[in-house]
Image (cartoon, rainbow, N blue to C red; front, side, top):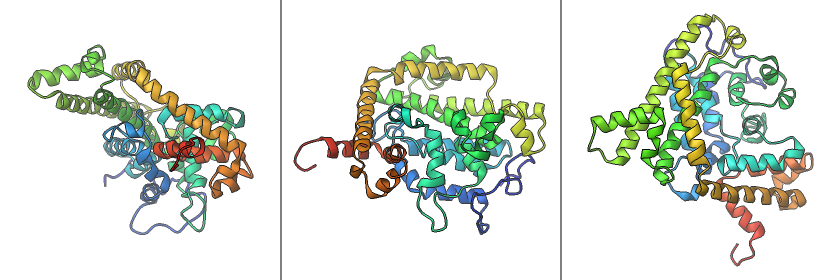
Amino acid sequence: MVETVSYAVSESNSRGRQKSEDSPQGRSEFQRDRDRIIHSGAFRRLEYKTQVFVNHEGDLFRTRLTHSIEVAQIARSIARRLRLNEDLAEAISLAHDLGHTPFGHAGQEALNACMKDYGGFEHNLQSLRVVDQLEERYAAFDGLNLCFETREGILKHCSLENARQLGPLGERFLNNRRPSLEAQIANLADEIAYNNHDVDDGLRSGLIELNEFDAVPLVAAHLQEVRHIHPDLPERRVVHETVRRMINTLVTDLIRQSEINIAAQRPSTLEDVRSAPAMIAYSTGVNEMQRELKGFLRTHLYRHYRVLRMSAKAQRIVSDLFGSFMEDTRLLPPQFQSLAEYDRARAVADYIAGMTDRYAIREHRRIFAVEEGV
């Protein structure tokens, strides 16, 4: 493993775990965090939670699980080049979507609307709730008892109202401070992964045609290069080669610009990182190209009528389930019925957020469909 710099997160400068434990044998504290995340039930369920397309739309589209693995690979590569804590960057990346609802952003928006009068729903906060409370794997504590820095990285967004209730974990949102560089890396690795792989999935689905990307500089430049070098390459392989080059461009630029930013700020401790401006960033030119790609995907993929139809169905399922469980908590599984005695709405939200796409569809059918065999 590459020796880390003084301002990287390490076991010596970590704020530790909420509940004290003996040190792990044969692995670091952050490797232990990664392993606990991988073995969690919430992580396994990511296999059947989707990014853009509902799970049954096709077997080759990205799921939250494959996305999280791709984010972890990108984050670990960047962290190694910058001599930061690779294991922490990987752990954050693997855990960042644990609290996501079924049906991607459509499910999140629906559940947030349902929870409007009960504190709302933020999937980053839900991911933290999963690792702090909802996982039930250990005799000595609820959740996974992860290190502070892993939990901090998972919570990349948070409203000020919720931040005030989180104690030390919420302080950076209130005091305009930054998380570790490892957390900053995981945040942008997430963006690199989903933007570029949504290009691949959008083309695979037929919702976007390859020639439409001629107006998107980040894609067009690499697409033209691939076509010039490999004029007889089948389109499917043209797409793979183009996406691969796009990811390489973004990662290379992010590393280069981050090195410049770190050299300018000259941090020597983790505390210097927290008090400085964000240092993990693209160059101005590449950042603009990335922004244009995001705008293109928002218009041509996420708002495509077929995606909107899927989203409308997904939102109806989530809303119907929420209303039904709120009206009669006896319809909930027993463990959630007991939670509902203390906070009905949050217990219902926990149950729905933990569902996979196909489980939510089946649960909706069980409750609302009147047909033999359900």
